[in-house]
Length: 326
Image (tube, rainbow, N blue to C red; front, top):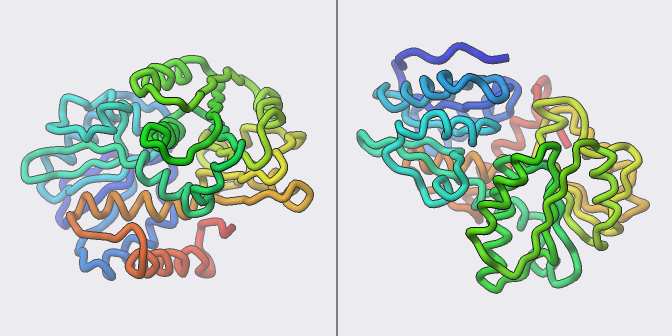
């Protein structure tokens, strides 16, 4: 349910622009991270309806731009729609934001408002945390269920690996319920020539996604980038799905019903599956944006990141918390 847009702030503020922000662990994690990083600021969640009215996105960005104590934002779910509605308000867009037509980070430098797309970086970090690069020295493929912003970002990361001559999936397959997003993704990929084959599959129903899963090579990575299981109920596949032997099954979500992961767990032993939720993605996504908004250095690996991850994990597993523990 959409919430009211914020008014002028009396303390330094970062915003979390999403759909169900109060249910996110970050609302409890952020104050502890801020203390550890020496940041004096509040995090305020602002919920928008899926594909909300453009004027609401525009008003939110305009508020951040002109309110002195509004320092920036992390944007989830609305990355494409928000930039489309508010592009004229930005003084600078990062290279990925321009290429992908989305932003996940809003930051200010003096009077300049900057939009960046961080997911091509953070999605790759999250993938490497549980799928080591040598895993791709095989016939393993990547299936991206959903063609939204997060899916596009990860595909760009993998295409760039191929361009650099690094190990990468044998093939990327992207499925989506509607053709428009697939066409938009394909148009972006055409600007990035590389030896990595990409197949775009129109799959209006979960049964059609089941068929795509069945045709993947052993050891493939299957990622739920649809939002189903978090922002909306359900899963992009049916209970009859057959995951490839030795597959890595990844849900970009870490909270909600996570039906997709439940389906994978039902086959984990028989199919020798590696199963991962979106928690590490959450850590990398938030720390990169916090670093950008507050201009603080946060290492992407090593003891400092491990300390922040430990703080977050303690909050996540605290009794009475609203997040799901997986």
